[in-house]
Image (cartoon, rainbow, N blue to C red; front, side, top):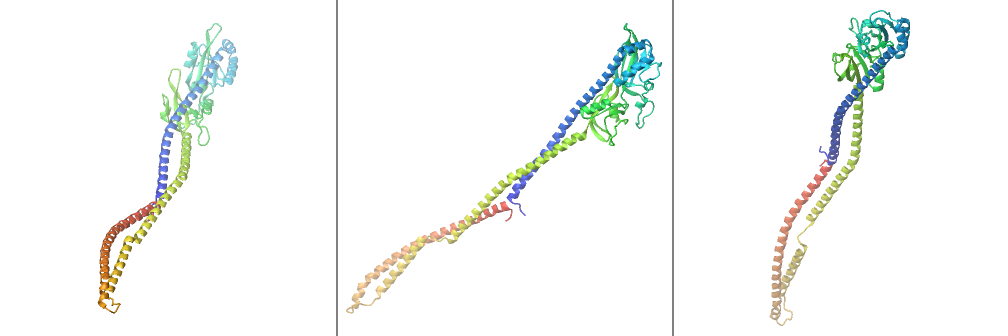
Length: 455
């Protein structure tokens, strides 16, 4: 079955629109994916910088609290008097108000005089940061806090984890500060050492995640020690091993990481101590599903509006196609009517009527003349006195009739020649006209077939 012009035009138009829409959708998706990836990378990088800002702010708070403790008059007097109870009370108040994990005062030899957590005094605190503080330097840094320092501070439970495969004694990660304590003569008489233990401490990661719109985590010793990431059961993701590629990063890393059953676009930055040694990592990520949802929503909107565009284009084009097809159909009918009229003219046409009528009249006249000639030659005498006398009288009239008939015969022969010539020419023209009628009918049939698709 052949397809009509109307169907071809509408089908071609719709196919062209669909192909154009498909190409546009693919191009839009590709462009959108590229742009979203760039946007996601920028967002994660910016958010990671923000996370580092929260981290540094918290470190500055630790430094400020420790420094203020070192210049606190009550702490100084208690240190000079070696009053452990007064030191413990003062340190405990500062620790609670500042939200520190531990706060300790040592004498000039590094022996513990008092702890805010009421831990045992008298032990020698061998921290290199305390030694630097006793030399007159104020220190603040992220640091690995040894297990033997955490135990007397009663912080071991905070670093305990359920990480599978974790064995042996585990250290903690802290933001620590140490500051010298001076007497009135500006001589160092001891030091204050305190800090914030980051294991299972969620204030920094929760603040960063809430403000920056992603998820934050702290990685230490190839495990997650603090995070705002949720597991599929809704619990906080912590004490889980991290991929080796992330756990050992020594420079910023960007990529995809799966945590808690979700894929995240992440940026992992190394945490350095004051000696520029890598001791931990800060992790910040944005779920890839968020960007995929934006892409699906945008692509869905493009497809929806594309369909609306196809519908509008069809509503506009269909009347145009219908009008064109009707015009072609009307032309086809006109061609058929012209062919029919031409065929009627051909069938009803004759050789020139004037020549035929003149020839018929000439033949009739010739017959009358011949009849008169014949009648005049054999007519009887009318006076009875002399028959020869009447015959002699009519003889000239017969001769004249014969001469006139002969002249008419020549005219008749001339007309017959003309009629024959006209008949031959008319036959040729008729043949050409018949061929033309056939061509017109073929054109009309072709137009009809073009429009309807049917012969």
